[in-house]
Length: 141
Image (cartoon, rainbow, N blue to C red; front, side, top):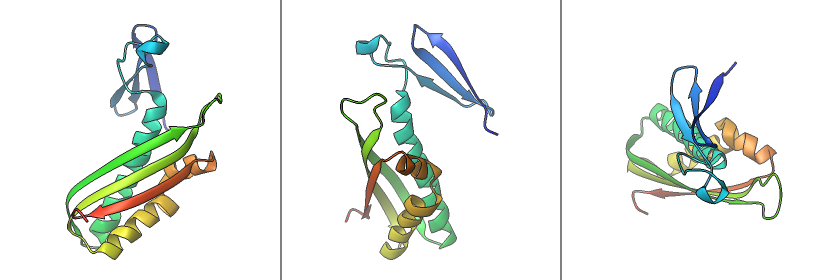
Protein backbone atom coordinates (compact mmCIF):
# COMPACT_ATOMS: atom_id res chain seq x y z
CA UNK A 1 0.00 0.00 0.00
CA UNK A 2 1.33 3.44 -0.94
CA UNK A 3 1.38 6.07 1.77
CA UNK A 4 1.63 9.84 1.24
CA UNK A 5 1.80 12.55 3.90
CA UNK A 6 0.52 15.99 2.92
CA UNK A 7 1.35 18.95 5.16
CA UNK A 8 0.52 22.62 4.82
CA UNK A 9 3.83 24.51 4.86
CA UNK A 10 3.19 27.92 3.26
CA UNK A 11 0.13 30.16 3.37
CA UNK A 12 -3.34 28.76 2.95
CA UNK A 13 -2.73 26.47 -0.01
CA UNK A 14 1.02 25.71 -0.01
CA UNK A 15 1.41 22.02 0.74
CA UNK A 16 4.27 19.58 0.65
CA UNK A 17 3.59 15.98 -0.25
CA UNK A 18 6.02 13.38 1.06
CA UNK A 19 6.17 9.71 0.11
CA UNK A 20 7.29 6.84 2.34
CA UNK A 21 10.87 7.25 1.07
CA UNK A 22 11.10 10.93 2.05
CA UNK A 23 10.77 12.39 -1.47
CA UNK A 24 8.91 15.67 -1.46
CA UNK A 25 6.87 17.71 -3.94
CA UNK A 26 5.60 21.23 -3.25
CA UNK A 27 2.00 21.93 -4.30
CA UNK A 28 -0.05 25.11 -4.40
CA UNK A 29 -2.76 26.86 -6.32
CA UNK A 30 -2.40 29.98 -8.43
CA UNK A 31 -2.20 33.47 -6.97
CA UNK A 32 -5.52 34.22 -8.71
CA UNK A 33 -7.23 31.59 -6.55
CA UNK A 34 -5.51 32.49 -3.28
CA UNK A 35 -2.23 30.61 -3.50
CA UNK A 36 1.38 31.77 -3.50
CA UNK A 37 2.61 29.92 -6.61
CA UNK A 38 4.72 27.87 -4.18
CA UNK A 39 4.53 24.62 -6.11
CA UNK A 40 3.00 22.46 -8.79
CA UNK A 41 -0.77 22.42 -9.27
CA UNK A 42 -2.23 19.01 -8.38
CA UNK A 43 -3.78 18.51 -11.83
CA UNK A 44 -0.45 19.33 -13.49
CA UNK A 45 1.08 16.59 -11.36
CA UNK A 46 -1.09 14.11 -13.23
CA UNK A 47 0.52 15.23 -16.49
CA UNK A 48 3.94 14.94 -14.89
CA UNK A 49 2.96 11.50 -13.65
CA UNK A 50 1.97 10.23 -17.08
CA UNK A 51 5.26 11.52 -18.46
CA UNK A 52 7.34 9.92 -15.74
CA UNK A 53 5.46 6.63 -15.87
CA UNK A 54 5.73 6.40 -19.64
CA UNK A 55 9.40 7.46 -19.68
CA UNK A 56 10.32 4.69 -17.25
CA UNK A 57 8.42 2.15 -19.38
CA UNK A 58 10.06 3.29 -22.61
CA UNK A 59 13.60 3.32 -21.22
CA UNK A 60 13.09 -0.13 -19.70
CA UNK A 61 11.76 -1.56 -22.97
CA UNK A 62 14.46 -0.01 -25.15
CA UNK A 63 17.26 -1.08 -22.78
CA UNK A 64 15.99 -4.68 -22.94
CA UNK A 65 16.21 -4.38 -26.73
CA UNK A 66 19.80 -3.09 -26.45
CA UNK A 67 18.96 0.30 -27.89
CA UNK A 68 21.26 3.21 -26.96
CA UNK A 69 19.37 6.23 -25.58
CA UNK A 70 21.57 9.34 -25.55
CA UNK A 71 18.83 11.86 -24.77
CA UNK A 72 15.14 11.65 -23.92
CA UNK A 73 12.64 14.46 -23.41
CA UNK A 74 8.88 14.53 -23.29
CA UNK A 75 6.52 17.46 -23.86
CA UNK A 76 3.00 17.06 -22.54
CA UNK A 77 0.06 19.35 -23.22
CA UNK A 78 -3.34 18.95 -21.66
CA UNK A 79 -6.75 20.56 -22.05
CA UNK A 80 -9.28 20.30 -19.29
CA UNK A 81 -13.05 20.03 -19.67
CA UNK A 82 -14.46 23.55 -19.89
CA UNK A 83 -17.17 24.65 -17.49
CA UNK A 84 -17.26 21.47 -15.37
CA UNK A 85 -16.53 20.67 -11.76
CA UNK A 86 -14.53 18.59 -11.39
CA UNK A 87 -12.72 19.57 -14.58
CA UNK A 88 -10.91 16.47 -15.83
CA UNK A 89 -8.19 16.23 -18.48
CA UNK A 90 -10.12 15.99 -21.74
CA UNK A 91 -7.26 15.91 -24.27
CA UNK A 92 -3.65 15.03 -23.56
CA UNK A 93 -0.94 15.24 -26.21
CA UNK A 94 2.45 13.66 -25.58
CA UNK A 95 5.51 14.28 -27.75
CA UNK A 96 8.49 11.98 -27.21
CA UNK A 97 11.93 13.23 -28.27
CA UNK A 98 14.48 10.42 -28.39
CA UNK A 99 18.09 10.56 -29.51
CA UNK A 100 20.57 7.75 -29.89
CA UNK A 101 21.15 4.54 -31.75
CA UNK A 102 17.51 3.51 -31.68
CA UNK A 103 15.67 1.63 -34.39
CA UNK A 104 12.52 3.60 -35.34
CA UNK A 105 10.20 0.59 -35.12
CA UNK A 106 11.52 -0.30 -31.67
CA UNK A 107 10.97 3.26 -30.45
CA UNK A 108 7.42 3.25 -31.81
CA UNK A 109 6.67 -0.14 -30.27
CA UNK A 110 8.05 0.93 -26.88
CA UNK A 111 5.72 3.95 -26.88
CA UNK A 112 2.77 1.81 -27.95
CA UNK A 113 3.43 -0.69 -25.17
CA UNK A 114 3.76 2.05 -22.58
CA UNK A 115 0.57 3.87 -23.54
CA UNK A 116 -1.47 0.75 -24.29
CA UNK A 117 -0.30 -1.75 -21.71
CA UNK A 118 2.14 -0.71 -19.01
CA UNK A 119 1.60 2.91 -17.91
CA UNK A 120 -0.80 2.86 -14.96
CA UNK A 121 -1.21 6.64 -15.06
CA UNK A 122 -2.30 6.52 -18.71
CA UNK A 123 -4.72 3.70 -17.91
CA UNK A 124 -6.18 5.73 -15.03
CA UNK A 125 -6.63 8.80 -17.21
CA UNK A 126 -8.17 6.77 -20.04
CA UNK A 127 -10.70 5.25 -17.63
CA UNK A 128 -11.59 8.80 -16.56
CA UNK A 129 -12.37 9.64 -20.19
CA UNK A 130 -9.18 11.42 -21.29
CA UNK A 131 -8.24 11.23 -24.95
CA UNK A 132 -4.48 10.62 -25.12
CA UNK A 133 -2.50 11.02 -28.33
CA UNK A 134 1.25 10.75 -28.80
CA UNK A 135 3.99 11.17 -31.36
CA UNK A 136 7.73 10.47 -31.58
CA UNK A 137 10.63 12.49 -32.90
CA UNK A 138 13.67 10.26 -33.24
CA UNK A 139 17.02 11.96 -33.74
CA UNK A 140 15.30 15.19 -34.76
CA UNK A 141 13.14 13.62 -37.48
